[in-house]
Image 1 (cartoon, rainbow, N blue to C red):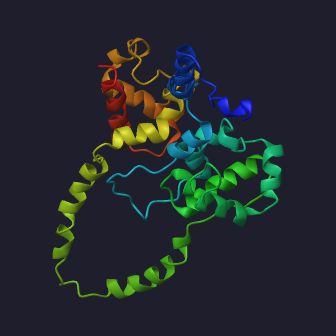
Image 2: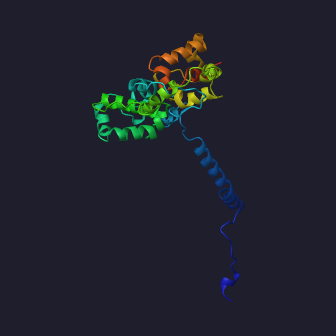
Length: 288
């Protein structure tokens, strides 16, 4: 018989030490590798606290805040410059999120070339980081006036839009003589009825929805106050707010309404006094 018949078939593991190392690399090492990968993922660089994406923050800032407010539909149209100052200056004054700056002819030239109707349509429907109607609550004609104000400041010659209700005023005027012809003996008893509703108007105008202060902060104020832009005190920074707290909520609210430093009047929004006060209370509460 051949010598091969006496050979014993053995594996690569011949000693206890080899068995130990094989077990280690087969079971223990993968566990450590997995732990290392998890640690690498978890400990990766994260955005700094308070850091905000300008376009995202601007888009959030210009969203409408739900409120209860009485508006007079028959009031005269606001001037284009007034609408710009109240609503558009926050972005168009500094060129945030790609908004063309007021008076920058080079930035406005390709936009003016599209015509007034295209500019108005973009402002009403929203474009890029700009929300519908610039995120405000102005009437369409007032938004149009703001568009004309900005475009004309950069060289356009667009005429200022007029109130669309002007044409509807003619039938009302024609109906006036008929009303005047009513018998003088008829008593105007219904005139006294609207009085309670009129008295309720100030209360409605100063009422804000629960959480409106925090909502307005997130949508308008966080652009500057979350990261301390242009000297704005950061939310929750007690040291930065220490010199401001003595003014009290009323004093701080008045400062926001009038504008202060780099902050435009009303923070560049169309928020009501009540909404601004609620936002101030929210920020003050964060440092107490």
